[in-house]
Length: 60
Image (cartoon, rainbow, N blue to C red):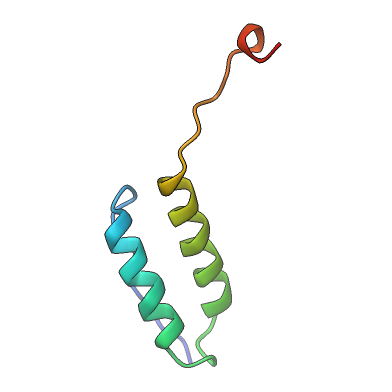
């Protein structure tokens, strides 16, 4: 089964959490479901723990 599902706005943390819940509740036969779950989990982690890149001088 192929399913097209919209993703939330990039910086919408609550939207990504709802999206992840929805993905987990869907049937396992959906194409690319596992990858979509992994992407949603990564996006949530990045939004919850943003990191700012350091300049080379700051990193040393």
